[in-house]
Amino acid sequence: MAGDFQPTIVGFLCNWCSYAGADLAGVSRMKMPATMVAIRVMCSSRVDPLFVLKAFLNGADGILVAGCHPGDCHYQTGNYYTRRRFALTQRVFNELGLETNRVRLSWVSASEGGRFQEVVTGFSETIVKAGPSPARTEVFL
Image (tube, rainbow, N blue to C red; front, side):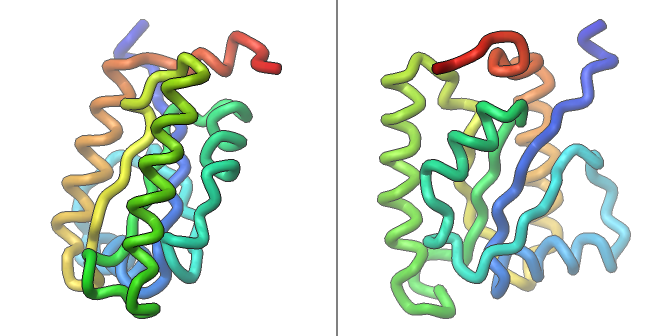
């Protein structure tokens, strides 16, 4: 049964780097699991922790936030805000008793299609091992 599980991963990808890295991986025909639904955001700093929590509570098995490498942000300091928001997100998950390994932050530049493939493949494997999201069977109020 565990081998049949196909996770649903919501990926919030920065327009300037991570989304372009995903595009490069696709154009280069790199093999990766088709488990991620990509949501393009102008900057990873625009991903509110509530977006992550809502995606998880609506049944996503994992959430990936990907942005430019620190110091390379198109908006100069956006990814520093992302790092702080991600730390807050993990604290919220921890306080609610949710698994923090279901949320991941990664830095992927536009020229790193191979890195994007590694991130998605690795994260997908982690989520498969963790199993379906508990939010699929439980109701959090």
